[in-house]
Length: 261
Length: 251
Image 1 (cartoon, each protein chain N blue to C red):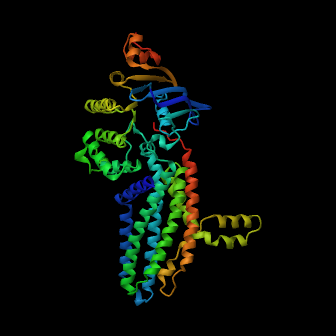
Image 2 (cartoon, rainbow over the protein chains, first blue to last red; image 1 turned 120 degrees about the vertical axis):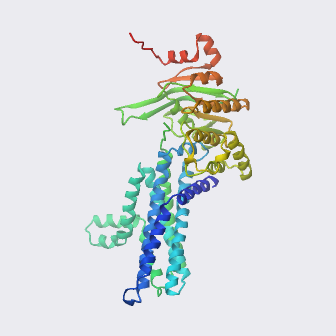
């Protein structure tokens, strides 16, 4: 565990010494604040629109940070050859995968906390209401969803040779799941056999990242918080996919020959 | 005497997707033993199989057949690397970290307690003369300084065996001398050093025993003084003769 946490520490240090996170945070803040200053036709729903835009920007920024941070971990270790002095120590390849996952997840979690604090302050100052419980649930479910994304990207990073290739493929996979996965069962119903069974199987196999999207809960104050048991089930669902992707990544990585010359 | 490094019938083949059909044989049935407390030079021309053998010993590459052991433990087990230090030919470190952070990270990987790690980091930074730059990111270091970072990280666990891949390559004469001094010092402390080098004069000065490998095959192994006496010439001529070098003089 010491090795895994040491590896995670290096990933976190790398993230906050790079400029990506700061650029995305400043961009989100500037866009939201500039829109927050405008009040179209004294529309009372303007705060809800503002919250929606701010949350969308947070979702995009967090996804970009998660994808780019996780995708470069193992390819960068190989390209910069830092993997050689590392694996020359009593470190297993499984520990490398786990450490990278933990580091990326914690680093993205820190970024997400900053984003949500900003969002909370912004919406609270306009609405004079502080539904902290809903914010915590929205944050937790998004963070858990990002754990699945990071595990998927890490698996991709041991399969694909370059980080750019991995980011592109994973970006389209994640976007496809978020936008289309929820409609696959409806589409399947309209198909003849065997396409129907195939689509249905696909629907049940893919991780439904869109289930973790509870932005409406935070945007509309009239909505009740998610029952805790549902949050727990969603967390367990994500944990299964994280385990599967990390295990698959380890299987590929453990037999890979690394040449130091 | 106890064998620290043992290589038995080691064979490594690489897939030859880029070089035509068949497979490339990098190491052919290699047998090698390095005893405790000796400085062992592993020599051969470029592409002879030295780095591949080292890569197997360090667990980077899987052997096609045969076995390799460190301290009697199969190199496939990560625990085999608990008592070794490795210095790669070029510097491959997290350049956004400071040398102090890098050494602390490796100390944690070895499970060294924090107080002991602090003591070792101070001593190593003094040894490699990087105390003044301990809080600067490694990316701001010169090449010589980065090579010294490599030496410090290789020694963080106070290893009993050091594996050095061309440790003096690319260093200026002072840097080379420093590395040589450190190897001599480690030898006097009873450590075992296994290193590859193209600097035959250096090898002749500091090695107890050597092995020369060519085209993946072991050509000669023995004590340096005995080899020199037997062939009535220096190590460079022995090496050139073994690898089949023919001087091409202008006609």
